[in-house]
Amino acid sequence: MKFAVVGTGVIGSGWITRILAHGHEVVATDPSEGAYERMLKQVKQNWPYAEQLGLAEGASLDKLSFTANLEEAVKDADHIQENVPEIESIKDQVLTEIDAYAKPDAMIGSSTSGIMPSELQQNLKHPERLVVAHPFHPVYILPLVEVVPGKQTNEATTVKAEEIYESIGMDVLHVRHEIEGHIADRLMEALWREALHIVNDGVATTEEVDKAFTHAAGLRYAQYGPFMTFHLAGGEGGMRHMLKQFGPALKKPWTKLIAPELTQTLYDDVVNGCEIASQGQSMSELDQKRNEFLVKVKKLAEAYWPGDTASMKKVTK
Amino acid sequence: MKFAVVGTGVIGSGWITRILAHGHEVVATDPSEGAYERMLKQVKQNWPYAEQLGLAEGASLDKLSFTANLEEAVKDADHIQENVPEIESIKDQVLTEIDAYAKPDAMIGSSTSGIMPSELQQNLKHPERLVVAHPFHPVYILPLVEVVPGKQTNEATTVKAEEIYESIGMDVLHVRHEIEGHIADRLMEALWREALHIVNDGVATTEEVDKAFTHAAGLRYAQYGPFMTFHLAGGEGGMRHMLKQFGPALKKPWTKLIAPELTQTLYDDVVNGCEIASQGQSMSELDQKRNEFLVKVKKLAEAYWPGDTASMKKVTK
Image 1: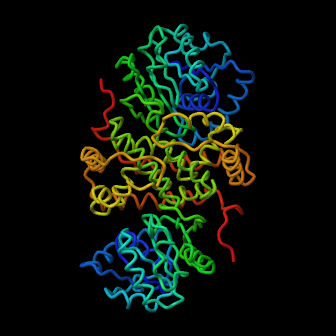
Image 2: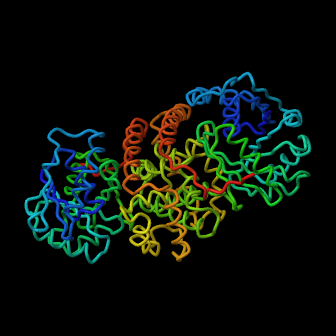
Image 3: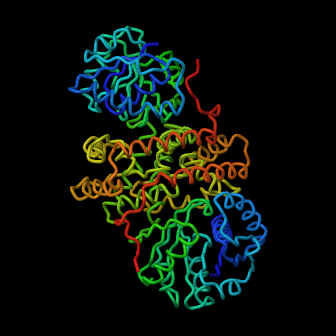
């Protein structure tokens, strides 16, 4: 399996590290001045963390090569990962070139965080072999990749792509509906916008907002997402109890995001989803697992949290 | 120091566990049928996790007593923590009673997640001794407490309250401006509403949304909040680079939350805040610390994540 990585910034270098760590060959390409040196520096900085997570047999930095020539980089590749700047005209131009130079059955994954695959594939000769495969920084540590097929992507491509990403240690989230920002970045964008509002309205500083998150909810979110977190906060009643107790708060102006109507369908989707995810464990078993995790993650995080600074104005005597 | 805990549900029992674990006496009270037995069961379930985090000298479950009589519970207490249901008429009635029965210089902390302290204190004879002190579930593990003084709270009370919460192992976030939902819950509410929209629009299931969060952003958020996370994703340019690159995305409909205008003031607040929080560390030093943490927290979380279920429909062959 030969990989090509097109665009070698923070995300491209992250992919290179991950792919090398799993023992594969990578040809990297980027036309910008000094790209090779910057990429090499980053990959070398990343490497110790890939080592700590465990290298595959045969994994070596020696399997990395670089060329400024796009055609040369992609012509023999089985899988091409595109990471050029998030500007539609640039994506379009580079993907058209990759499509022209690559073997007809080579796979193309685009790392775009926001653009929908149907848009990216519309000018390709072989649109059926493109998926969005959106990773998270740092790519060589965080396991998630959102795989989003476009309207013209064929199913065999998507299956193949998901296998490839799993083979390099990733957890695939298959995104069944194309939306701008996919799923994860929409959640992060809502959080980011609310955080900006709080600072903009003069309610708190960036440090205070960050602390409000890391010292409570952030610790929980390393284990459970927003749904299971609420499920576990509901005591024996789980999500049903939470929706009864906090459903009415959806009408309050607690954020500048207008909430959806809590219809019966939405209620059922949310309650059933949490029950499925519980996989037969009782609330008490879930509670204990959460506690075990939180005790450990709290001890771990304490050593890594940024300390309070003078600007964290507490009341002083 | 004698503590009284009024209302012994999930949050009240959490406070009791934390206070006992720090070696203090607690009198608990709750008028509901079976409250004592439920509370005792919860505190006993919580206790092993308090032990793992380390008990103070003299910490013992024997220092807990219970009475269904509110007056008896609060009359000798130095600090009273109120955790009754989040309904304004109930809060108002119980706080008025606490105020009448307590020593005039006893402190009152309300665990309310949404109501502003100025509202809670308006009918009290001694409004100056009330603050909101909003904890996070599970209270005996998560360290954050948001301390919010109301218009009538005097500064000495706030200082004293913050000292008391620190003395029982908490990290105080002093909230300088009263808003409904304080700070942390506004962030969580934005995330929660966006998550509900994604499910409501049929884009993804609750399990998929949770996975999109825990397997990437959630791991990062145990260490850094939304601001420092973006600061570290910006490479050498930090937050400046991120605002240049992703500032324009604030105009996009990536969430149903309308974003604030990225004014020069907001820009400066955000960039300066991240630089202060960096405490003189270079981007590369920050990067390394983040990587060290992420490698550890990822290994830890893998053993605790809920597994994929059949409803996590990936493309199948």
